[in-house]
Amino acid sequence: MQGTSYKQGDKMQTWRKDFLAKRKAERKSFLKWLSLLALGFTIAGYLSYLFFTDDLQFIGLETKITRAEVIRAKKVPYMKNSWRTKVTYQFEVDGQKFVGQYLSKGPPKFILQKISIRVKYARSNPKRNKFVEEIYNR
Image (cartoon, rainbow, N blue to C red; front, side, top):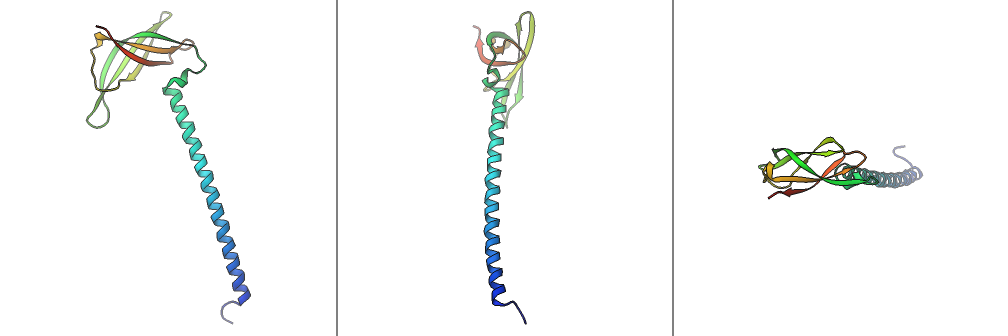
């Protein structure tokens, strides 16, 4: 008796079809779960990035805007064959001095004596501050 009987072959074909269909459904379910997980991590990562770099860090906090003086401006490489200016500024709140930094947009273009900066800070924690705009003194 070589091979299998007709009934055994039929059972084998039925089992194989069921197995492949079940495996395809499991793979589809896994890919849906994986894509939802990736989407969730992307959204959470983007919100945490905004929290540390944008106005989201000031949600629920009382803020104030003040002027700051530029302490140092240093040319730093930005991408290939391009430069930006890393500006360090200092402002005073209730007799305490606080320092912050930002990367200026565009090429280095200002003289330290002719610029001041507007800074937004949280009144409860002035260490949490953000550059708002450059003001050119004439």
